[in-house]
Amino acid sequence: AAGPLATLVLALIGLGAAQTFGVGINLEASRNIADIFLAIFATINVAILLLNLIPVWPLDGGRIMHGLLRQIVSTPLADKATYLLGQVGGLGLIAVGLYSRTMLWAIGFVAWYLSREHYRHGQEQPVTLSS
Figure: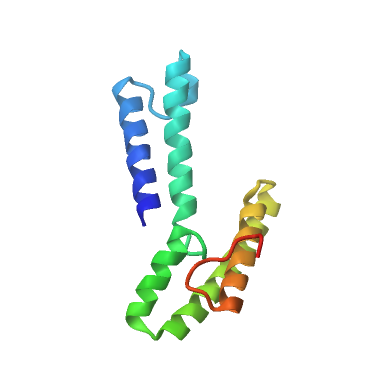
C-alpha cells in the first residue's frame, strides 16, 4: 500500500504548505498562481487518496481488503469476496458516475472489468486491459 501512503504524504505536504501560506483549500481566497497551485495540489491528492482506498479490486483498497480477508478466511473465499465487492463496487461507481455526470462511471467500468477478469483467470496479479 505504498501508493496510498505516498498520496497521503503529498496531500499532507500540500495542505500544510497551503495552511502555512494562509490559503487552505479555498480557491476564492487565492490571490496568486502559487496559492491556486497549492490548493489544487492538495485537493487532487486527497481525492486520489480517497478514490484509491475504495475497496474495489484492482485499487489499493481492494488489495488491502483481499490481504485482510486472507488472514480471516481461505484464499479462494477471499478471492470470491474480493471479486463480488469489486463487481458491486464497480457497478456502484458506474451508477454514481452516470447520476452525477462525472467520469466515475469510467473508473467503475474499469474496476468492474478488471475484477471480473482477475477472478476469471484466477491470477494473483491484476490483468491489464490488453488481456
